[in-house]
Image (cartoon, rainbow, N blue to C red; front, top):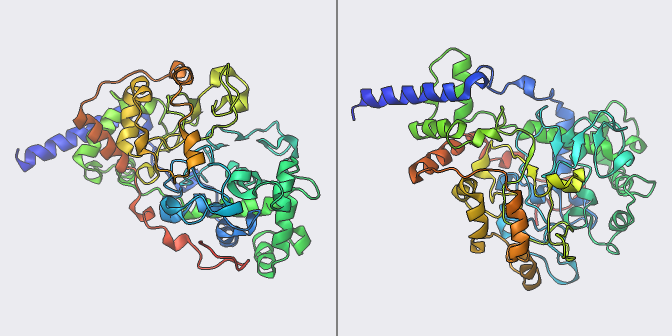
Length: 457
């Protein structure tokens, strides 16, 4: 094939991709207007807080333990090893002795890329934190009316909750006073989780100065609340981990500027994009600027791990995870999970609400025939630190034909027939959603934190 012919086909593919995008193409590129204004003082404070173990009950892990810039803002494990573990990312272990973890965190650690954008009004895989103008705080959350007012965004509201989870950051009852408050359901009271954490921060002079610089309503240490901390963490995440200069972004920017966008992406990525928006049906859920419809869908990902305390009829071990139903109370939402944004998706495995798939291609192929994939799942791909008692929980649901059938019956995506080449092209397109400047995020890691605790184990 001549170079001229190759160029012509590439140009044709580019035109087909624009046609596939349809009305979305114009103005589809991400801009500063999609994000809140920056606040450098809050970002500086939030950077320290994100990495400071002072926010965990036993002072042994931080927000960044499971959302590390060194591991794609996740941990590269199927299920996180939270409070009590040791190490970072795929090298993290389950801990030793009395401090060892009691169970795995039951869902995969979602990445944080671009979550500061205005359109992200729901957080967590089940959407249990969401903007709600009818709620006193402006957000519907597990805390109900106890959630304090003053949170800037859904991302900030989300930051209120990992510190209340025994498996993530709080620790187990009897280990520390924050864990005890969590066990008692005391989040917002005088000795609640959030007040105790704010008290810790008030006792560190450097933090007091940082809070004063970041917030006009803080004049003394006593003015500091955990809401301020959550807003600062969100400000940092929004600014530091905005990643919107991928080849696909440059393609859209060129189109918006009236230029030929063809050179921005490879021929295979173009073909993959066409498939994504047409034959493969990916864009039926992965739509919009951030490639998510922000809704909830049941796609039959195998159930891995300890579960979320749910039980199909006839069971009582709590190893099921009903997903969105836990929030809505509607059985029609059973096994539905929030559509993730696909930006930086190649960086953020394992994939699925519980990290069941260890390769991006495997996740794509699951979508082609979810029923067959669910029932032929190979658990050897799981990326989990081994421990006998934890291993015994990992496949309880998946190995039970009755429970597996419950997941199967909820699947809402129809089979799609694609060739191996077409699958490869879709994967190539997904890689074209990667902003290369966000591969190495080590510059967003502080070399120390004001508490004096170690940044990493």
